[in-house]
Length: 183
Length: 181
Figure 1: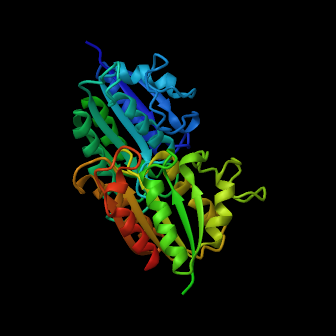
Figure 2: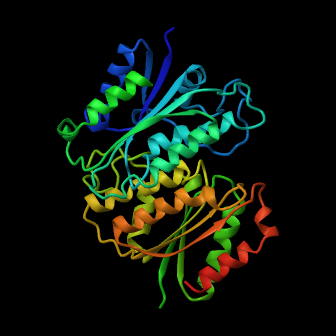
Figure 3: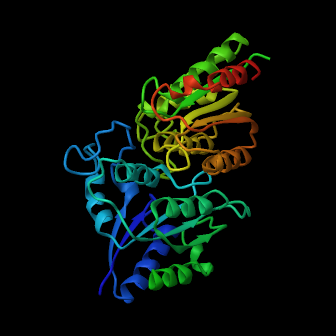
């Protein structure tokens, strides 16, 4: 049976390294028979969590009038969730963090649609060759998986990508494709 | 030595625990003679960095023309940056991350950055300090990238309802941190 994969791409560059890896992931995932839904969160208007504590009062997870209204239902019905974004100051950019902050609505007592079992993976890259480039993000996503009780489906993290297209000189696209195949 | 300290707060909730901690830090720092400016990122609107690299090209720090353009001159005046925030999903809330992401504009615009050091005060509802390890790693990595000195991290667990922190000695610790800054 076809499974639904939600890909949240957080790079503002439409043709950057993360976009290329996202496409490779989607190719692998679709070849494996999955249905993929992709959102490019950097092009969307998604406000942070304002801690208003009115989650679900308007019949949907977040009460704010922003583009999360498009993502929420897809998140609820997805069998797997993948975050793909470059490292900005050691972590995901705010365009993607804003989606994560909104998960709050799914862990409050008033939650009307529990997210339940999902597989979870991340795809990331950094411009530094610094061996510590991913020290914050990898334990972070594993922590999210544990907290949400999602199954860790793995990650692809490629360092030292300076220019658009640099990922083509690495095994990053192959790894993203394989992650897609096995998600 | 008297410093210009920029306190960047992250909570959208007025008078919440991190606001109380920020007030305490500022009290101590001002009593020690420092100048403190405060930017309440949690209640401002800063859009994410689009990596357009047009920073300062139209005279404004960011062409997106959001509240970062108020923050950027404050950053330029500061000698020290202190982030006081709740923990959201093991790291900075979006509103703080958006402000951090746009430090990039100062680099692209080749603006003089006087900041040489930073500190972090972070609170959350979790029991124990393990869940705060990620934000500490991120904060340290930001310090590394900008060659800033780490002036300390105050980790405040087990506070949830607004004012919970008043039942602890952490406001006093934040005030002492400010006084000894």
